[in-house]
Amino acid sequence: MLEKYARFVVNNAAQVNSIENGLRTLTYILPGRFADAELASEAIYTLLSFVGAYHDNLLGKAAKSGLLVDKEGRPVEIETTPFNRYHGRLSQKSEVYHATALLLSGLQFSEKLVEMVVVKKLGEKLRWKVVSWIEIIKVVLRLNLLQLSGRRMVTGTVVPERLVDPANLGAAKKPVDGLQQAAQWKGGRSGLRFTPVREILDKSEGNASLSGFVTGEVRNPEAVAPAKTLIRRYRALGLAGELLFILRPLIYVLGIRKMGKRDWRPWALSLLIELFSRQMIRTDLHADRRGSSAATKHTVETDELSRRKWLLLYYLLRSPFFDRFTESRLTRVAEWCNNKPLLSLLGSLIQDYQPLWQQYYFYTAGS
Image (cartoon, rainbow, N blue to C red; front, side, top):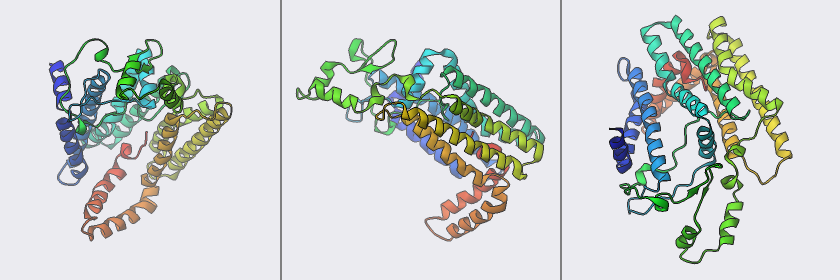
């Protein structure tokens, strides 16, 4: 049954993707439309997250096997990203890492829905116990990932990125044996993929030179670097900063439980921990960069640090800052948008999501 479903998804990737996108768009406009609309919306979104991750995994396997073609029937070439190479290699090397990554991803997909169900069905008091336990489990899982990776940065998401746009795919080719099934040869120990010389010459119609190909690969050191070097090992300062970042959400939740959601102390303490953590990690990585090759890039680290910087915007949506400063300004923006034909949808979305930001922890947790 699963094999037939996998074949259906790969053969109809464009149509399946359109259905996913349509349902995902629906989840953004459902809140506020009817009683418990936000619960229905979050349930659909959570289910789509799990299903979408499974579909991405199926397409990834088909791509590695050389089975994907575009709408004209031409083979689709897939070049993996540093992010996927890094996490893929660690998952391949350690079953514990793979299982931990899946558990963490599952919690991230479902945490909003779990909190919402607890609030609506079991009450406010039990909500903070459940939230605390979710954050405790996430801390344990991230500490495990930190250890298994050899004291390297733990990225916000650990599921593989989508490498192909399903909207551009046609019906998949039938599987074939031998080298024709895989366009690249994969090293058993390193996990690196190597393009056969014959394929290089065939694609260039006889005009390629091996020196030109090698030069192109050298210009992008990340493409040929061992997967584990794509994120550098922390020294003592960076490790301390990473531990602070991992523990920060749990400290914040415990502060809310002790002092209340509208107390400034949990909000300020969480912000200080996040700022100190960021500075410690940046200082550690900058010191390491001075001792390494200037040509080496670490885009996985850069992207993760950028993501963490944007997470600081959530402090504008957390009480008591939201209640004191942001709410009134957002309300004025929403009212102004409601009077503009093209912006009325934006104004409606702001008004629908304001209660969710105020009521539910995980909507602004950034964890």
